[in-house]
Length: 503
Image: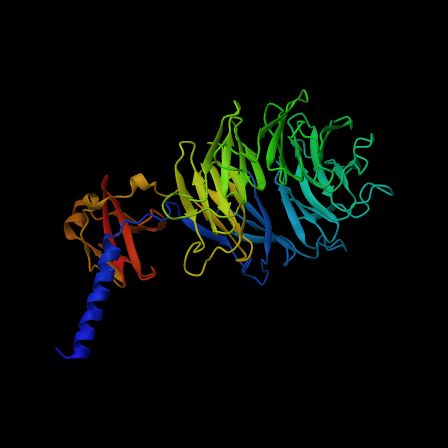
C-alpha cells in the first residue's frame, strides 16, 4: 500500500471512529436547557447592552437588566420580547442616568434604577413613564445624596437608598416624600456610620444597615429610632466583626451579618442576643475564607459562600454546619473556583456561580450537585464570560449574568440525568446516521404512530434544543452543530427514543 493511500485510509478511519464515539458517548455535562435571553445587541434596534452590572426579576417572569457602560435598562418578557425602558437621557427632562448600578422592582411592577454618577434614582412605570424620585439634593440642605450604591424596597412601596460618600440612608415614600433615615452620626451616641454597604427590611418595616468601614450595623424602626445592634466587638472575646459586606433577615426577625475580613457570620435575635454561627474554622474540617455572600431559605437555613476557600456552607437553625459544595464542584471534573454569588429558590435548592471557573452549579436539598452552565454558555458563540450574578425563580429556572460577555442566560430544569435514556432504551430506527440535513424515521415507528408525532431533540446532557410536530417521517437537523443528539418521539400514546450523529 502506498503511503498517500495509507494516510488517506488512516484519516478516514479516525474520522469514522470519531463519529461512532460521539454516537455512543453518554457523558453528562449539564441537564438544563440554556437560552441567551439578551446580549450586546440589546433590543436589536441600535440600543446596545454594554457591561451588564445588575439584573432582577418580577413576579410575572420579566427580567430587567442594567448596562453600566451603555447607561440603560432593558426589560425581557418570558416570550423573549426585549424593550429598552430607560437610557442615558433619563426622564428626558434634564435628569440623566449615568452608570446605573442597582435595580429593584416593586409589587406593582414599577422599576427603580440607581445612577451612581448621576446621583439619582429613576422610576419607570408600567406605561413607560420615567420619573426621577430623588437626586443629589436628597432630603434637603443637610441631607445630600452622593454616590448612591444600593437600593431596597419594602412591602408597602417605600424606597431606601444608601449613599457611600455622604454616609447616609434616605427613605422615599410612594407619595414621593424624602427623609434622611440615617446619617454619618449613626445612633447619635458616638457610634458612627461609615460607608453604608447593604440594607435589608424585615416584615415589620424595620430597616437594618451595615457600615463597611465602621464595622457595625444599625436598626431603624418605623418611628425613626436608631439602635446599633452590633459593632467591631462582634460577640465578644475573639469573635470580632470586620468589614461586614452582607446582611439578611429571616421570617422570625433574626438578622445575619457577614464579616468578610473576620471570616464569620453573626446571628442577632430580636432580643439582641449575638451569636457567631460560623467562623474561619468552617465545619471544623473545611475552612471558611473570605466570605462574600449569605442567603437564608424558607426553613431558616443559612448559606454562606467562601470566595477564597471555594465553598458554600449550610448552617441549620440548630447550628449544624455542613459544607454543601467545595472546589471539586460536581466531583466529576467540573470545579468551583472563586464563587462570587449565590441564591436559593423556594424548594431550598442553592445555585452558586464560580467567577474564576466561569460556571454555575445547582445543589439540591438532597445534596445532588450539577453544573448547569459553563463558559460555553448556550453554544454557537453565545459564551459566558465573567459571571457576576445569579437568580432563581419558583419554577426551577436559574438566570445568570455575564458581565464581560454582555449577556444574560436563562437555564431551565431540562431532563434530570436519571431520565436520560441508556443504550437499551434506544429503539427508534433513524437514517442516515450520521446525517447532514434530513433525518428519516424508521417506517415501523412512523406507521405505529398513525402518522402524527412530536419530535424533541436533546443533546446528550438532556438539554432540550428544539421541538417540532411532524406530519411526515422526516426531520430537518441542518441547523444543528456537528455532534451526537437524542431524539424523543411522541405519538399515539407512545414515547420512543433514538440517537443520531450530525456531521
